[in-house]
Every structure is written in C-alpha cells, then in structure tokens.
Image (cartoon, rainbow, N blue to C red; front, side, top):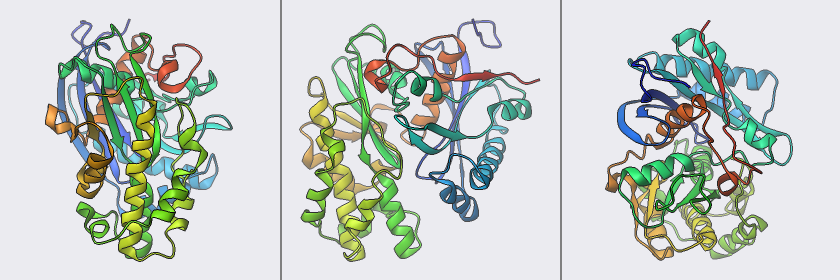
Length: 368
C-alpha cells in the first residue's frame, strides 16, 4: 500500500487540473488517506498565454496528429513550470488536457505524458484517470464526485446536497453524506448538466476578442431570446437519464442559435442556457438537495448565479461559503483521487459514471 514519506497512511498529494475553459493550470496540495481530508495546502495557478491557448483550441476534437502533439507539449511544459515550484508532495495527480471525449465511441483523450512528468519532477505521478472507466462501459466523467463526498464530510454536512461545477461544461454531484462511503449504494449521483462557460467564452473571443464575460457585464445588458432557449432545452440530452457526460463541443450549435442576436442578447441567452441546463438536471436528483454549492469559474458570474437562484428550489451559493476554494476544487480533487489510485481504492462507481462496477482508474508512473 502506498504511504507518504513519513511512512504513515496520510499522503500529501499535489493535484493539477487544466480544464475545458482553456484558461490555465490549477495546482493544489491535499493531505489525505484516500478517505478523509486532513488538510488543504498550498495552491498556485499558471495562466495559458494567447499563443498557448490558440494551440490548445486548435487541437480540440483531435485524437492524434500534429495538433494533438503540439497541445501535449504546451500542457507538459505548463505543468512542469507550475508543479516544479511546490515542495512537500509525496505524489502528483496529473489530469492532463482533454481534447476529445466520446465514451460510447472512440473513448476519451487527455494529452500529457505522466511518465515524462514523473521523471522531470522526481515524484510518482498518477495520470490517465478516465480510460479504465470508459473501457468498462462508464462515461469517464465526471470524476470529482468521490472527492465531493469527502468535501461534504469535511464541511460537516448531514443532509443531501449538490456540488455544481461550472467550468467549460457544467457537472452536478448529488451527495448523501450520511452514507458510509462514496461507493455505497445511494451515496452519489453525478452527471454533466450541459454547456457552461465554454460557449460564452467562445462568443466573447470571436466577437470581442475577450477571454470571458467579466462579471456577466455583457449578459446583464442583454435580453434572453426565449425561442433559442426553447430549442436548446429540446435537445434529447436533457431527457436522458444519468449518468451521462458531454464533450466540450457537443453543443457547438448553441453559438449558431444566437448568431443573429446582438452581442449582449447572445451573451444573455447563452448564460440562460447554462442555468436552464442545470435546472433541467435537478429533476434527476433522488431527493431534493438542501443546497447547491457552486464551484468553477461560473460562480464568479453574478448574472449566472442570479439565474440559478431564480430557477432552483433551494439556496445556491459559492463553495467559499463553506470554506472551500472554488478555483482549486478540481485540482484538489485530482490530488485526492491520485491517493485513492495509489492505494488501490475505487475512483468511480455506477452512480457517478454509469460504469458496470467499481473502478480505480489511473496509471501510476514512477521516476526512473
């Protein structure tokens, strides 16, 4: 069984996440035994420059080839630059960058070589978290729910609640913290709710050359086009029973739906689509949650948060309200999951990804 440098069950892991919003790399230290969270440690962020982001964006949807290879080089260099500045880690959880995700087709593709990173950092690296789940019939996403269960315990929750991550794609985890373990029957349900920041960011970049709608300022000036919103909600995905997952570009036609709208109306409509996807997804929760805690960049958009507050039947708040870090929760998740993989514990189950049995995804690479 993997142990920390102290020889104890507690392991200090360094997790890293580069999400579908393509903004940069998050990194965070977590001390855990793979079950309980003992301490959240140092965090750091490295943004992608404009040229790096362009390379990554060009590679989206690619499974191999020169564009995917160029993206891998960007991802590896950025992670090494950021992770090399940390001290005290026993191992690293390296998610890489998702370029394509087609669980019922070609599989899933995250670029970035964990074996190379292990050699450069001189630490064991856990990577390729999703492939085993997909190979056993799962969606391969979302993977943070087991960590969300630990977070629910860490904040002392005693009733079912939801964690809503609004990154490039939105995903929801319904948690019953009264269950003995995340893999227990009825402890977790998780699925992607629909597009979140990705189409809004794409619109801002294509029309205005900006990375995102800062503070939802553009959306606030606009009016939601209800016809486009109704067409969006008519997509069969929303009626599909979870677990279910999306690729970043699965709803690329959203931008086409708002093509004729003004900049402000288009931003307002795309923001409303994100909120509506979440509201639609809430019908799948086994019982209504006591509250929804929001993580990811979307929680910083006050217009989106207001729309969620109006459309959901329970309190909605950023995870900071309970002492968690919404910018770093996914990086912390892959630190936590890395420890579970190293200890041979499951990282997904039928309730989180639809996989046929408990799966401990991930490969452990050791420095030579």
